[in-house]
Figure 1: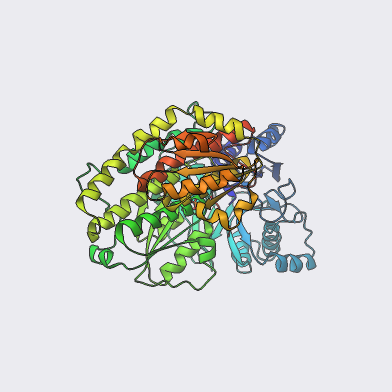
Figure 2: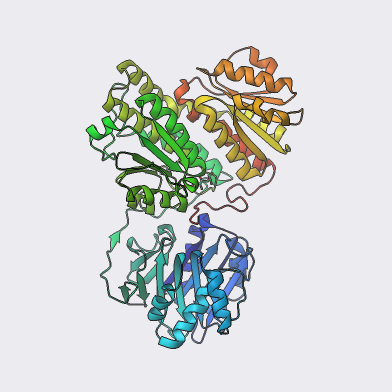
Length: 614
Ligand code: AGP
């Protein structure tokens, strides 16, 4: 988490930094700051809260830095120390000559801090980052060269970092380095751009160098030198980024989340183009690099992911096991990395991630890669760190997702999983031709069905209004829609802060049913199919405890009218594809509840879009 930016060149720096930070707000938004080099000093400006607060702060001081062409900036998601001005970056050494911005976690910061304090360093913040400022400043005092000082200091640092550092005695130099955190340098005729992620500078240049771990780059307005941690020069690999600057616009919607929900029919259409043409044509999935014999004989798959991507992975398990008969284990990456997992070269490991950057998933992927597994990545960011680890890469092409609550990327991950599972089933011959034709025909109809839901939201809005003041919310489902219940609950809690939980409906009677009374809403995801009747009975059980019952259903069953206070209808769909159709009203319900409550829908408290710390 956290985003860092920097610029050195011929243009005024302040707007470049602020615009860059705005593009990185998905990485955190609890405080921000910049440092700019003026003729005589380095000036630091910081503000608590959203980036607009920093903009207002800077407006008061523009005369101090409007001629500056060199600076660094930071947007924070607090890990060590509360989100206050004091803890906001940039951090400085005792005398303020050296400034640093940092993304990552310095794991040995406590030991370093004690050591540095004993050498006279006076700490102002509670952050891990401030140790870097003091440490590099001490090294600089010895070697009088910022690059060398950074190389020496990073040898003492444990943990993950991307760092951007300036020193007042070196008026034409920014030094940057990284380990296990992203850092990219953009190259242009006017100068050099530094950022945690491409959107921060893509409107200025498409030429870029992705730094590898432990490399140190020294940038001046006209020059760029890349070295390893021991000072040996390396020739940089310059890439031309396949990106277009995107004007991040809400397109008339009140929030990005609502816009992204409405983009979902087109997201599915875009994924299917070129891969699924007609119900009787075979799936084309050239992205899968495993040869067909290996695929045919696969006897185990592991899927690792976090949050919403984990829920997509759980549905992936249902469909791969159902279509292909291959056993699939799904695990939260954060658990997977700290136990003795049984993974080898005969296991296909699938990593699912919107950002392709989530630290836990990235670590899990690296661990399984080291054990020889084929790594298949399903991500919305084909340029991400995870994509770089992939043996097979399936980009989900949902387009940039701005809202912290994932919506369209989830539907894109699910669609990609269906394609992958059908592709494997076709190779294995594990489904009949008529089953395949029916399934593909239904998939091609999904965009229209979602459009139908989006064109009539009244019942969902009324339901949201009715239940907006509830303290708790329960979602129940069975079978393939159990992960839908989890995802519906996650959407609601992350943007409305209501305590929402998803349960497999059969588990209610094993404990959670004790919580039910006339104040508790229970939303039952009742899709026609194998478990419909069972779930109906579980809903009856909940109703018998006076819970306030809501149905999300594609059934016209008259029995539902007596059982449910609210019925949200969705179009008919085969059970195996119902998680896609069922999710849309749940996204909308969460959205409208949060909106009625006046919450910050796109940037909910305490969260960040990209979780790059463990
Ligand atoms: C989703 O709404 C969340 N913001 C979060 O759970 C997210 O899905 C999770 O952090 C994983 O992110 P990733 O898909 O980028 O790996």
